[in-house]
Length: 303
Image (cartoon, rainbow, N blue to C red; front, side, top):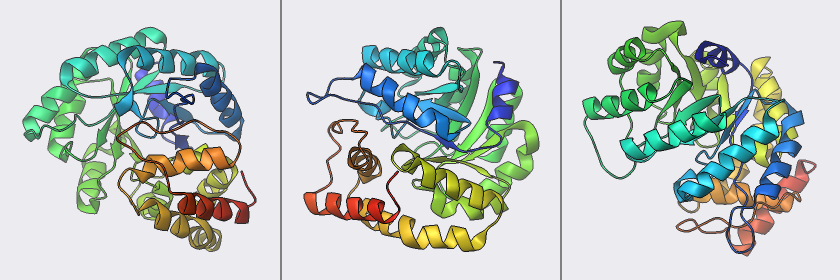
């Protein structure tokens, strides 16, 4: 799949980030991960991002990362493209990028570098170095310490033909509009705020109809129903799902930092597709929160 072909795939449909399965000792569970991908594939996402933020990329050792990407590529080879999360320092991100390409990933999601604050020019140089280290398509994720402006993204687009996508995790409407207007069809654009469904209608109005769903990991049918309601602009259905599920869900998710991942793993456990525990520094939901989430899922009819 060429970068331009991947860009076309990412320009429509729902995307998601599968959880990474760990066993009871916290070790990567490849067979459980493969079963998870096989379960989710028929629901109809356009692509999956292996070892993304929801997949706890930040907690994986290098050898585990290779195993995660290989398992995802081998399992989904005939059903959908796999994009691999990459991040960390520039040299580390390049190593991950080249390993993902070697293992057959069709593209990369370049996650923000961690901890160190940097100038706009420094971040742009980081993105350019990663893009030029591979031939597959790259989607850059504007979030936290990565806050690229429209002029810098335009420069990167000129220098890096395989930079084919922009994912927004900032929620800065002025910046999003400026990027969308300046870059036009040069990129595919993805909504990437946590629990993106809450922002989906607003982003569609901005010309960003595609987003990634975390709840797809445990209520895939609801996630797809919501996406289709957004696509056909069924405001009544969208409003009902937001009121009945997403706002109560956010009430639980927002109680502690890191719950954006923990609550998804709890949801998977509730619906019978346990992905194991989260790794530190993340923490599990309390028993009370777990029961509240279970009741919420049950009201929606389960998966």
